[in-house]
Length: 256
Image 1: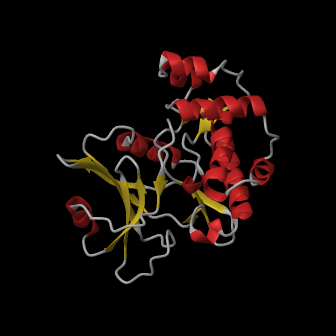
Image 2: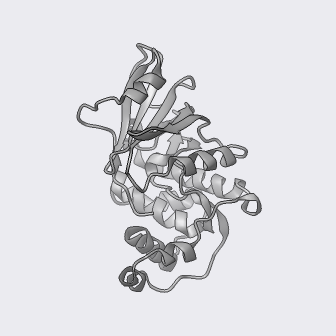
Image 3: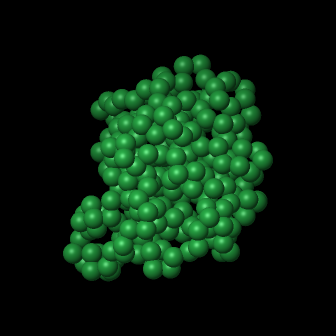
């Protein structure tokens, strides 16, 4: 998976008819947009303040226009259902598609994204929570029971010959875990005390070397918070940086 640029919408967003229908009488608030055209909306009790991700009775809709590749909502629904047996992730309520789009409806889960303004103002706290949350995910999800893979051989095999030459030699496996697959900062949720509470956006979850996650999660700190927060992340995870594996997996992410 290559990096898909995403952000809280800064301009007005037209709410699709399907999202309006799923909302019923709830308020519809656009909370996320990516460069591929995918949108995420929060459906919440009318009149509730617009702060992101605080109420368990909220629902969220991911909406992807027809014909857009790279955002597999069916894969995400399957992975959420599997991972939810062991770790906090959104519960799937509905999914479907029509001629215009595909959608995934999930229940709300307590917490704010690690890129909520509260945590952008406290980046070291956020970096530590991301590291602690990723360690908990890796230690909790059972590798032997996982039906999904994010293995390096498959990922390298999908590269073009030119990209394959650039990515370099595959390092030995350090430790196989069930990786998040898109462990960038926005996909960890934190409570108001700065502790991780859950993970979201699991469409690439699968078994792989833990450095596939560690390299990218730490990489994303710079994109979201600026320089200087990797030490806090690795300290919270409980591991020393491995420059060779970090370089390889970041290069694979960029080229993938």
